Picture 1 (cartoon, rainbow, N blue to C red):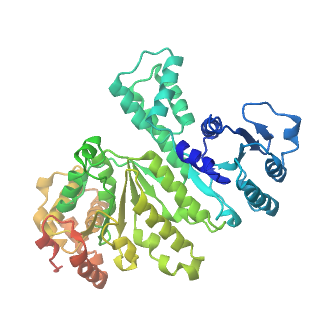
Picture 2 (picture 1 turned 90 degrees about the vertical axis):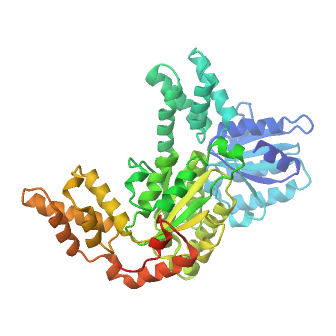
Picture 3 (picture 1 turned 180 degrees about the vertical axis):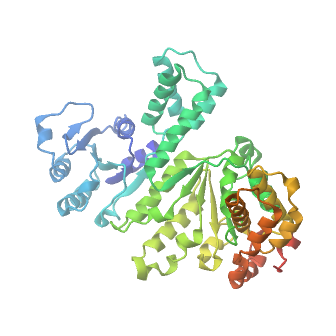
Length: 503
């Protein structure tokens, strides 16, 4: 960021918007640029509380005359020497006509001079009048070398012996995504809690990252205890995931493999799409972040929904490598094509922003999305290259239904020898995994009410009393299968089993 910012200032860009919550660290970086020996500039910092103050100096009487943003911008316009003017949190005044007009006048007067205004704020809110004039930069979070300096400072302060290189690397990599202030606090917390800092403090760092997700409000940190073995069947899909379990390691980069982009899982409701996404996080050893699209949309302020999405994606990138999980993608983006009539085009803009991010992202974020209604998905999602693979999860085959019964009976600590799994799988033909589980639960409730153990006959009775989705919505299921036959990869172990159509 420092290099890009330096280039913009040297190229006489008059207005730069720097998005960051790290005012102190960003201020130090800007100060280094201002102290450039070839073209030194004075650096002034403005806040609503203190007015305009020269960096590193005390407040003066003149500062009191520049408390109002209009007065501060006017002062910067009159200033004749080469200088950088940093305005902190000017965005609450963005709708004030006087402020916008003064900024436009300042931009015009700065042409051909060695002066620049930097608007520093944790949120990106730019007046429409300035969109053509401003350059937006995101202040990058601390890299490993910066975090290493923070860790060294904390170790020196506590007079602790140096960490081993391996322990240090683990701790620093776990800290990626934290601000410098957050890293300092979490290292101090580790020391207070255990009296020393070791690689075991990785858990404390991860706990801090969970707090970061909670503060975001749009992302949800999901912890899944079940392994991928808890998913019945889906052999092809499981194999694909196992092959890529080390895809985000340095060994994979050295080998020349690109980072996986993501996968879209289509299929009949209740067949394990969401569960496979959740258990993948444990298989790969990555944090799982669920993006709640319902929380992204905010009609209270124009542009707020887009800002919510940008903030959520930026937070996800700061936690990377990670899996970003979007459940029921068809509901989130299914109406984007006609949103101009319903929500002023907000859905279309959100959809466009998300597609652009997927196309251009370089951070190790693997997008796992699920969908039930493929006809509602915009065609842009389905084109080749958007996802690494599109899998179709069909209703479970007979052998897969046996696996599902085995998993759910074992989960409830029942002796499998008491049940004929083959007979149960045949009776449950056309049932999804979720429907099989609910039938089993219904049988258990019936037996529990009679104060006895449930039996094979109880399960069969519960199955026969249930009308599965494959029959109530047979046309939709058939249409989905027809679409997926030529456009998606079967998640089942056998392609021949995938193409069966009988119920």
